[in-house]
Length: 361
Figure (cartoon, rainbow, N blue to C red):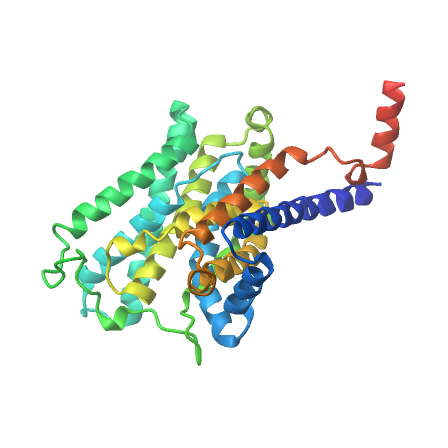
């Protein structure tokens, strides 16, 4: 009977998010129709731009790489019952730390060691940033959603201050940017592709996060604390340490995404790093039900949508923000679907349904 219950719950955890996404597609189709575009033609263009060719797949994977990492910034704390949305700030701080380390080391070390130092700097910067939100929650009772959101603005302001001040390259007048990191510290592409090694970082991080949460004692303790904090404390679990550790790991993933964007895409730091990958990662985490492995698939799907943004404007005369509208619709539908868990009889254990009917009788 336990296996039946597990099967039903697993089916529910898949069916409801899929239903939410399908509902979002219908609503977005109505939006396109009202904007004067054929919804079916729009969906066809999205598919071709995202998955219609090997070149399209590469564009999709390029955008999916940072999404995998930023999604973990929300997915991991969610296992503790925390709603962290400071992904964008951790990404920016990670990129800032990577640039500062890269510029400080220059060409004094081999490129591989410089990249390693940049990665470590981004991991520590992003981890400490999100850990601050976890510490405020645990020790001072500050809502982690609000604090992590506000930390985004602080991180962006700090980055802008340094890029326009001590780190500014005088050669860039109209768009303040930092000095360029040494070419030896650039993150290259996978063989015979335009996809950088950040994709491998995202895949490995997602796999390790799944193993940590689902297959280790630490993960079991974190899930126990997330299910019932009072029971976890009675059992002697160090809730405070778990909170800080999980938040640090979550922020580290988003910080690494910032390093990847700097070392593989921009080669320097400027306002372009604020590209909403952090906020999109929140959507990925919720659609994936905070499952680290599921974030990989959802990141690819959302990456494809992001890759199709330009073609919607060129081929269908839709606004440039159409993709953002689609993301918002999906997010609202997924949030609403959260309230539907446990409400459908088909996903409940039959004995429980019979006992409930007997009680009512």
